Amino acid sequence: GPCASVRQHALQGLCKGGGGAMGAAQAAAASAVFSAVPFFLTGCHGPEPSLREPKLPRSGLPFLRPQAVECPPGYRLHRGVVADGAAHGYGWAMAECGIKCDLQEACHAFRFRSSSQECELLLWSRELSRSISSSTSSANSRSAAVAAAEDELPGTQVCNKSVLRHFTGAEAPLFGPGDIVEQTGADLQIGENVWVYAVGSSNLIWMTWVDQIHLALRRLGYKVPVVPANRTPEFRPRVSPTCDDSKYFRHLKTTRFGRIGWSSWDFALEGWDGCGSDGFRTIQGLRVKCQHGAGCAFSKNPVLVSDIAQDASKSNITLVATWYNDDQHWSTHFKCFDGQKQDWKDIAPITLHCLLRTVRAIHETNPHTWILVMAKYPETYKHRTFQFLLDYNAQVKEAVEKEPKTRFVDFYMPNEDEGEFYQDPAHGSHPNCRGSKIMAHAVLDTLYKEKIISRSIRLVPPAKKDLLNGNCSELGAAACHTSALCWMDPELQRCAPYSPGVFL
Image 1 (cartoon, rainbow, N blue to C red):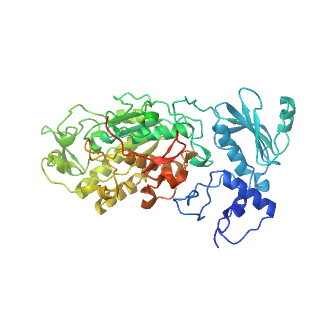
Image 2: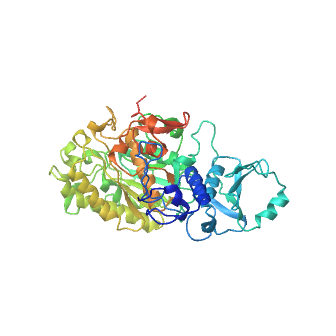
Image 3: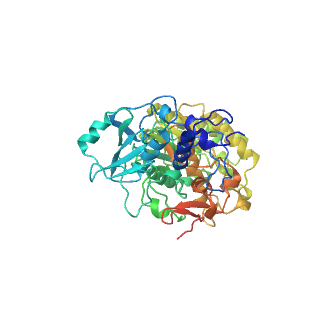
């Protein structure tokens, strides 16, 4: 049947079922390597996601192409000759070698030999610390001169690690091999700087999703420096629930411009341009009051989209969540619209107009910045995802993804009947720690699928049953990362329940 033996076909890159035979020795080697390395095959069906080897999405086969095998993501060839890996089938073992080097702070490079699939980690303390081999024999210590000579032989490579940040004992460590997926050809390689900037409403101030993204990027091996913004930046939530993993990210600084109760037009225009003597201006045919905040009743200080764009242009990834309040003005009796009731369909043209103005202003300043526009989570009765919200999100997605280097981040936020995913009682319209995890992982998944980052967290295909799977002790890494009710606890080193968070 299709994919009856994934391991047998792994090194041939087959997942169509049926064709392709391998010798017994090759099949055994493929099985051993495939068991050890966290890369996925498209279309292969394994056990159910709740088990140890879940069904997994496409991540690409970066090391199984009919060409020379290069160093893994985050590594550069230092010495030696790149051999034809497709002929020898050692791409999986080489990838695993890079991951093992990642997990050791002292490892600055590794030496790989294709004939024996032998991996030697090179540590700062001494040239050769130990040998990790896929065969049963152990490696012998060699002098640096002999090793250097062997580096010139075909099929022997030394790959240098990009400089990764150092973790203290109190920090969550790098993700392990079972937690990650990797690919080649991405914009940002392991060890490089990921400059993250976020602009939006109170979701940046009362939630932790941006901070969870920062933590995950660090644990994936990226550096996440602070974007040097000028327009009254903040770096952490003002008030948010304490999550099970807060101790790992509460000290991290991620630049953001967040404002409570603001709508998309508060961020997208040049101050009070177009405002008349009556204190209103017309945006896409609707009269909108020239004042910020809920009910357009708070700050009168002008905010220029050009200032926001200047700050965002210093990032290579900007997160935009400015439109969550656009359809919420029923709560203030539509004072922003001079008391005139407006349906979401009436407000949608303003949302699209303002989001596009924001995106274009950023790209006018820096066309290389990737912009991720976040989907809107339900702020409805019992937080149910009604059809209008699906339609609203679909309109935004269609509009923004026509822009270059702009993607829409979609996700499903469970409702009240499906579990506790919103803060209660404070800030009840905002998702809690679990909801923030859903949003953070959706961002990472989008960054990976769009080949913006070369490494991401291992997830199972999006499905409600996996998102709501609370059998944490039974879940493997991918299913655990996918579930909003569980997390991979670095201290316990296993999947554990993930609480909604508490206010201390």
